[in-house]
Length: 535
Image (cartoon, rainbow, N blue to C red; front, side):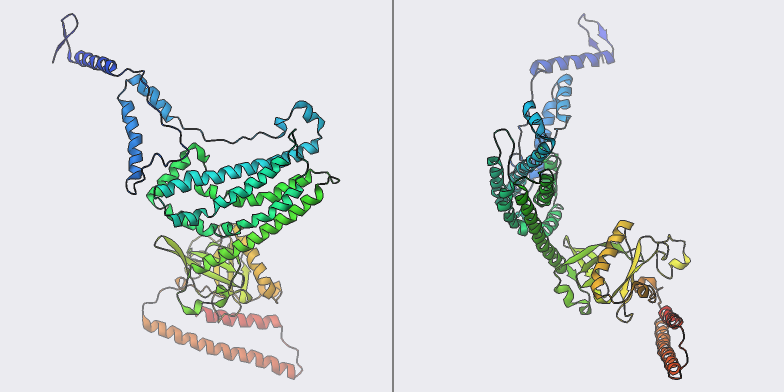
């Protein structure tokens, strides 16, 4: 293949290809100039006007829209394409809030006329005012950028959104009223004299958050379930990448009211700390601090009852014998979390006010439930043993004794006082901190029912683990019957030996002989029980 240059001479193949490429590029530049601008995407605070409201294919159409802009830019000259791509590749910076301090907005002369303590007091009041402004803005944003678009696009139903978002709209006027009163109390120079009377009259109205905080656990569970939907996941991800979200996910916005409630006592204490003792606002601030603490206590009680009932409804019983009225009537959940048993299997424990329930988490129809594992242990019959690291090997009492498995750490044991009612559970926490939390919670629950001293509890006999996984499988049914027969014989021997021990002690006491050491008698009984357990 050959071609002619401008003079008319022949050119080699490579030169020919270059000439053709230059000619094509020149023709494209004549058709479409390189300085043509691409119309940028308009700024939006919501994705509703970009995503099609069609139920199926909405996410795909939004992706195609972005792709069409990219293809249009690719048809330009190399220089213009490089510039447009560089602009599109630059991430949009997240929206940041104003973090200016109150003292930074003061005039120099005004700042010199105030004492250091008064400046700190005004800073604390200004922080409360600015926090109310941020809260109102976030509540409105949650409705405008999340709730309304998902409802318009049919990403979630109205009932689902109502359960997740609750009554957020009803709290906006509440905080706007408080913000207005704070503004009225502000002087022309920017200082605030007294706010105690405003807080005393307004803080009791925060009891309106009882229902919202009580519903948070169910709302979080529903939101996590809906995130499995690809459309919901894609929408929330695009919102997260948008500047209005400030890199916060949806739940962060939904949890802002609760976190704001917790800050009120801290803000009041800070204001009170920088208020002179002879200031007329001191008594009102102290009264306001007591009011908000009472409001939070009532909300916590209501939230605890709702959380307790939520998990009770999630329990599944494999046997009617596992059911206990103390579970159904529980109003308080002292502690709950994931632990591992001696075999390394994950268990989820619930320490209610009067009973400890061990469960296994299961998932059905994208919903999580908890199967009750073994017999629940009433708190009044519960014995807690704090085990040292290395006392137990992971993998079972039989297999672990002859294996090179690592020694268990952060372990403790719970069991019945009466071995006939149930067997023991050796549990392992993730770290020493979580172990100590469990120990403290269990000790607190057991304390009202505990009559024995700590030394007596340590001398109680050690029982074997109640898991079947710890015992080696026996395929032959004859061997099982034989073992059960031997177990019965050992039980009979146990009763006879126990009667003999008691009879000897009574005869010695009648004859006036000195009784044997009670500790030796207890150790003898323990050894007999261990033999029974091993069989």
